Image (cartoon, rainbow, N blue to C red; front, side, top):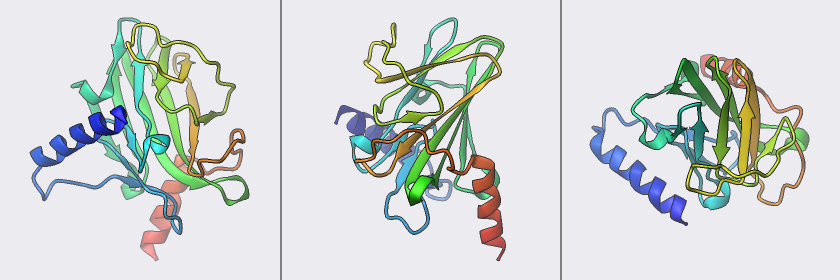
Length: 196
C-alpha cells in the first residue's frame, strides 16, 4: 500500500501543478476489457491495486536513478497511440522505457514494458512487481544500493533491449506471451482505427 499512497500522492501533486488544459490522461488497457491503469509522467504504472502497479529504477555506472524524482525524464505518446515512451538520462545516453497494453496468447491481456539501453554502458533495471514475466528467465537478486526491495532486477547490455509483461489476470501463472503485439504494431493499429 506504500507504493499506491506515495505514487498516488505524487500523481495528485503533478495534476494540481498542471493547468486543467494541459493535463493529459495516460491510460493503458485493451479495448473491450475493463482493466485500466495510468502511466505516470515518469513511466510508473498505477493500477487499481498493488498487484497491477509497477515502479521502475535504473542503476547506471554512477548511481541508482529514480525516474519519479529525476529532472532528466522526458515522455511522449507515440503517434497518438496508447504507447508511452519515457526517456531517462544516464551517463552517455538514455534508458528508454515503452509501455503499452495488448492481447496475447489465448486472448489474455498484458501491459508490456520494453527497456532499451541507448547508452554505451550496461545498466540494471529494477521493477516493483513480482508478477512480471519476461522474454528471458528472471533471477531473484537484490537491488544493492537502492534501499528498497525489488522483486525483479534485470541487467541490460549496452545498445540492447528487454521486454517484460504484466498479466492483467492476477491468476495468470504462465510465461512470456509469444504472440503479444509489439509497440509499433499497437501504434499502427491505433492509427488505422482512428482514421476509419
